[in-house]
Length: 536
Image 1: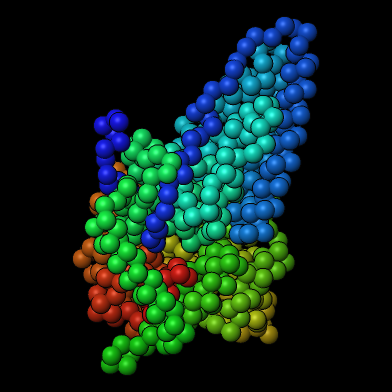
Image 2: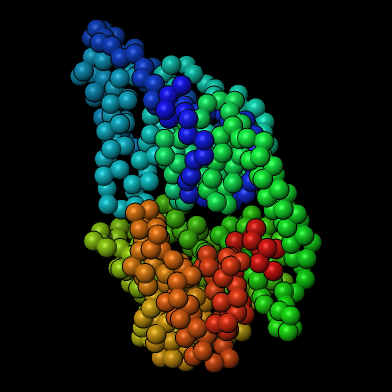
C-alpha cells in the first residue's frame, strides 16, 4: 500500500450540495491510455482515410444521440454541449488538417487524429477568452470519441457502474456526464473541475451531491471503497470507522428531516416573528428551473437569466423567437411576479454570432448595460419582446451592471420609444442591478431613474473585495458576508425609499446571513429553486 492510500479524509470544493454514502466506482479517463501508433505503407493511406471517414460519421451519429438523450432528460441548453462538439468535428480546417497529415506522414489514423486534436486542444487552452478555453474539453472529448470509433469501441465504461455508486474520476468530459443519471450515481467526486465545469452543471441539474478540486483524488480511492460524502462541507471520508458512520448518519438524517420539513411549509408566506413578510423568489435560466421553482413554493421569479437564448445560437434571435422561447420557459410561473434581466454578456460570456474585440481585462470592460448600449438594435429587440410578454406575465425588466445614471437614461430612451410603439400595453417596471461599489455608493443618484433595485452580490463582492469569484487562488478573499459588502447593501436599502430592493446573489441563499440581511432592511430574496424551502 502506497503512502497516498493511507489518507483517510479528503477535502475539496462543493459543486452541488448534499450527502451520500456508498461504494466508490473509480473511472479512469480513456485518454490516459495510449493506443498503438505505427507507420503505414503509402498504398495503405486510402484505407486509413476510409477508417477516418467512417469514424467521423460514427461520432456524428453518437453526438446526435447524446444531444437527443440529454435534451429529453435535462434541457436544450445542456444538449447544446454535444451540438457544439458536432460543429467542431464539422470544421473544414480540422478535417483538412487530419486528411493532409494522413496523406503525408504515413502513420495510422489513431496517431494522426490524436496528434492533431491534442494540438487543437492545447491551442484552445492557451487562449485568453474563458469561453473559448472551455472548448478545450470538448476537443479532448472528441479525441476520445474518435479514438474509440477507430478502435471499434462503442460502450462507455460508465454503463457498467452499479446503481447507487459514488463516481470518482480525475475529470469528467461531456460524453461521460451523459451516462450518469440520478438512479445510478449517488454522488460525483472529481479531481479537476470547478463550478463552471460540465460535471458541476449536470450534477446540479440532477441534484446529485458533488465535490471538485480534490487533490490526488484517484490516487487515494479504489473501486469498492466505502465513502461518506458531505458535499456541503466538501469532505469525503474513505472506509470510515463505525464512529464516523454514526456521526455522518446523524448529520444526514438531520439534513433530510430539515429538507422534508422545509418543503412542507414552502408554500406558506415567509414571515418574521413580528409578522413582516419576506418574499422568497427563484433565480432561473430554463424551463426546468421555473418548474422546480414552482414545485418548491417560490413566491415568483426574482431573476430570469436570458443568456441561454443567445449563447447557443449561430445567428441572432428574432423578436418572434425571443417571445416564443420566453413564453415557453416562463409559462409555469404565469400567475407570479417575474423579473427578467436584459441580456448580460461581456466578461467571461461572449455571443457566438458577434465578433467582439479582445479586452485585456473583460470583467472591467464592456459588460452588461455597456454591451447593450453598444448594440442598441439588440437592446431594442429585447425590450420590444418584453413589452409583448408583459401582456401575459406580471413582468419587470432589469438592466444589468449599471454604474452611472447616464447609462440608465440611454436605456430609458429606447424604453420610451418601444412604449410609444406599444401604446395598448401597460409598460413593465424598469429596474437596475447594483453590482459595483460605485452603484451602491451613488444609489441616491440612480434611484430616481428606476422603479426597483436588485443587488447582485456575487459581482458586488468580487469588485468590493478585489477577488475574482472564479479564481481559486484568491477564494479566501471572496467573502460575500464581509462587513464591507453588508455596509453597501444597507446603504442601497436606506436610499431606495419605498421602492423594492432585492438580493439575487449567492448571499441570499445563506441561512447564516439572513439575520444581517434583515437588519440591512431587505425583505425580498431570490435564490436557486432548491433553496427556496430552506430559506423560507
